[in-house]
Image (cartoon, rainbow over all chains, first blue to last red):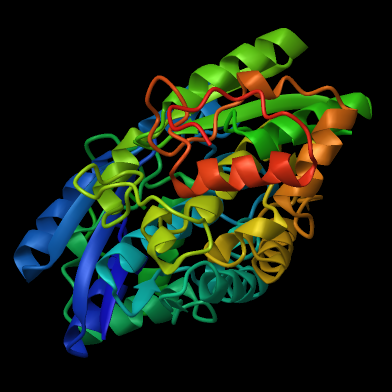
Length: 220
Length: 220
């Protein structure tokens, strides 16, 4: 099959990239610039696609900032919260309707290319904070995807019931270069080690009892 | 209630603008630049919002052109087909997944503003050609909209079962300045009178047996 993969350059979508590639699928990786604070992730996406020789497109819709407000990732007046990723304060990192926007763009790309599917790496660990990573949201979008055009595109979210630790485990089997992936919401030179996504990333490696190759500003 | 209204400056969404306004709702009109050939419609949107004193925002995501191809509205190498809007050739005017993209942006804006709803003017006459104007697509998107965020936004598509002629009828009751609205897909100085949307517009006025105030290049 051929897929448009929503690809941030983060850990989860990098594992999915390797996963689909290992199964022999043709991929077109789509990264979106939406005015995110951590645009550093796009460099990671570029480097990994180049290593895997996967076609990669960066779509710049940073004007989206004009309709998004009140979240720490596109509104630079809001500080990135630190702490465990399940805390209530992490809701500040939710970019309103980000996944629907990204999926709609990826579906448009897939329809234009007459591809079979769109893949994205929503995963289980996100549910507590991110409403648009829940299985019921994915199901609703699958129905909408099946109706939005005469050309049928399947929406594939194979990690929606998996935890981040399970994704890391899968990534180890696939030999994913974790050191090249980018998670940190602060998007500085190094992973901060303290924001929600850094905490989640660390925890996922610890649960697998393997070394985390990420270089963190804040050591354990 | 307060709504973000997807507002193109065309006939249908202009009637919906007047309709919601007449019911006392607070409106924020959102127009999208997506690289459309007929960006002339945005001037119409601006003029009508200014007349009605409705807050109006133009979001420029014209880079979308980079993921859309093969349609006459964003791919300038494809000519706008002429003829009746129900003809097979009109499929060339379908911008892949446009409505899902627009709805996802409007929902993001509504969530950011903590508004109650998003409104759009998908209508019955579009179904033959436009898959993303069908009631079943609207229903799927309503479910996705209800799940995409913790803040609930209702997706309102009151014209989904109405024909264009019925929308014109409603517009007459509401005293909509039809002469200010813009439909033509060619987007030149005047309505061409021959493209699918001009043909549909003419037909809708004829069915109501009233004068069409539009100035067409091709006279009847």
